[in-house]
Image 1: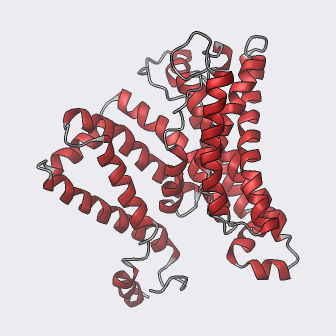
Image 2: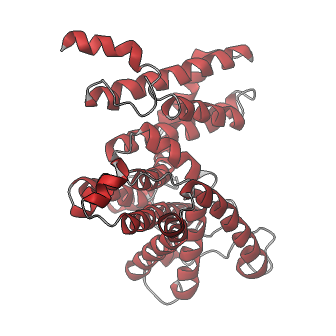
Image 3: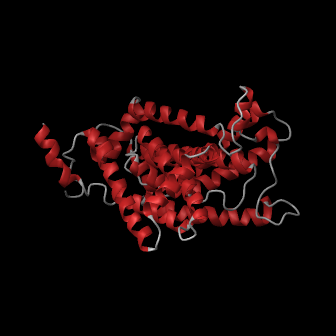
Length: 366
């Protein structure tokens, strides 16, 4: 199958069968590598799944990682529907963390949680959108490719935050490159805390109310992209820019707004990390979450349902992989990144690898 050629598979097969085959291929190669370094692939798989879903604390951490990946996956998908490849999620999450921090520094000593937390949500979205606006503007008005500019903006964000931490944000007298701890009014309610309202004893994990916000964002994303006038313009621009112009759509405006929409969604991931887990911002809080969002969106086929399932897979890989690395020293953190890289390879660059082999099966049925 040539690149750009329309798929011959039914839509449901594109969304389910192909990603499943890609995942199986990635896991099969991983199993060979695990076997080559002297470990039992089946035993490692059981440890990985058990670490992610085998006990309450593991499930809590899996869902916590899943929450962040949903936000960044939706961010990549939003840009992709406009024909843009937003690589800058990492930088947008970083700058959104700065917005959350500034909001907390300004108000966490004077405002109660019901007012303060919405302000931090708005700040994270505004800062994320603002950081994505410039690449969108340069693409729409100056022809600079958004892939190149967003990559550069990731480095600029990292350099900017390094400067701010060392000169402005670092806690006085502290030894770590982190801000002071925010007041409890700014903490996102944890599942353990919310469970206590109903008499439930849940494990102590960073899983927090951001998960509900992520699921609400999925519903809103579906509603906006597939059931609104702007969503139609977004998808038309992404499918055929020339046809969009011929239909009277302002492509430049769609590109800029799409990037801001994407940056705002990425920014919400900072809330999950900063207010839901560490309760302060540190230099490494993003931990590659923006880059994982690219894989989540690719594997989820840029649809909210697929993104939730894909984010859950990567959340399980992250949490289960950490447990696996404790039991099997040969399986390092880098090995988990290797598995994620294989999934990205098969679900991105090789996403149609198996289509020629399974297409005849669907033709015979029809």
